[in-house]
Length: 453
Image 1 (cartoon, one colour):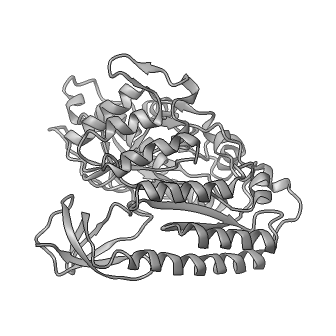
Image 2 (cartoon, one colour):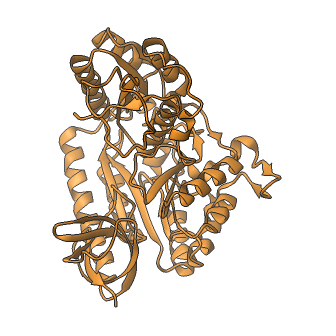
Image 3 (cartoon, helix red, strand yellow):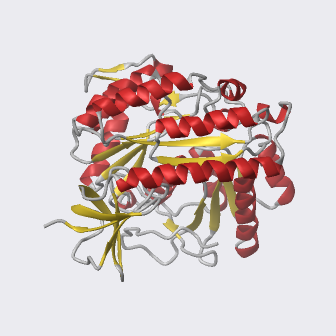
C-alpha cells in the first residue's frame, strides 16, 4: 500500500521539516476528514511524505462500515506499523469495540481516535512529532480552499456530520453521532473558495443531505438571507456557475423542491437516493421509510418536471427475513422505477448493528443468487437507459487524457461510482474542460462519443 500522493505547494523550507505519512480509506465523507487534517498539518508547517521511509509518523484514517472495510483498515495499520513503526489511527474504527480491537491486535499504535476528531489527531502528532518553531509565513502554504485529495476540477463539499436515523443494518450514528449541520454561511464560503481555485464540480455530501438544518431548526443566516436547509443551499450553489451534484438524499417531501432547480439547469439533474429495498415488510425491519408505491409516483412526477433526471440508488439483498416474495417485489420495483444507476450489496452483519439479532437470517448461497438476479435485471435496465442517449449531444467534463484519448463524465455520472464517456483519439482537451460530445455508442454502463463541432 502506498501513502497518499498529491500535488502540494511548499514554500522554501529546511530539510529538517517534520513529515507525516497519510493513508485515507473509506467513503468521500472520510476523504473530507483527511483533507481537513492535512490542511491543519500543512498550516503548521508539516510536509506530507509520499513513502513510509521518509515519514516521522503515519496517520491512518480508517473505514468501519462493513467487515471487509474493517479488515482493509486493519491491514493498513499493520503495514504502516511494520514499515514505519509510528502510527496514529483515526476514523470510523476509532471508537468502541473496533478501537479496542486495534489496540489489542496492534498494541504499538500511538493513538486511536474516532471520525472527524481532528483535535485528537493533531494532539497526537504534536506529542510524537512536535512542530518546528512557528513560522508566521507557514499559513501561506495552505490555499483558501484547503488541501484537496481530489483532482483539481472537482471537490466534495461536506455539509453536516452524523445522522439521526437508526437503520437496523447501520452503525454510522454510533460512529459519527447524531446530525450536526454546518452553518450555511461556512458551506457557501467554502464553495466559493473551491470555485475560485478552479473547481468545476461540487459534490454535496453528508450522511443525510435532506436532513440538513433539522438540528438547528433551519436557522436563518442573516448575512446571506438563506435558511440552513437543503433547498436554500442548492439555490446558493446553483448561482456559482459550476456543476452541483447532490448525494445521499433521503426522499423526504421537500426533495420535490429540488426538481425545478434541476429542470432550470441550476443544479445537475442527478439524485443519489439510497432506497435500500421495496418490500414494505423488509423496509420496516430495516427501520426505513416503507412506502415504495409513493416513491414510484414521485419518481414519475419528478421525470415529468425534469425529463433528463438521473436517479442513482443502492439496495441490500438478503436482509434477515427477506423472502422470495419480498425479493420479487424488489425486482418489480426496479422494472417500474427504471433507475439509471444502481448499486447492490449482499447483507453483511456488522458488529453493533441491531439487524444482527433479527430472526430468519438468509443463507449465503441465497444472498448470492438474489444478488446475481438483481444485477442481471439492473444491467438490462441500465443498458436500455443508456441507449436513449445515443444521438444526443451532451456536456462532458474531462477527467483524464491518456494515450488512447480523453475520458470524461456526463451530468449523469458521479466520479468513481458511475459510468464514463470515452473519447477515443481525442487529445485536444484538458482535464477539467467541459465540452460538448456527440454520443455514438453505449454498453451497459459507459458511453462513447466524439467532440461536437
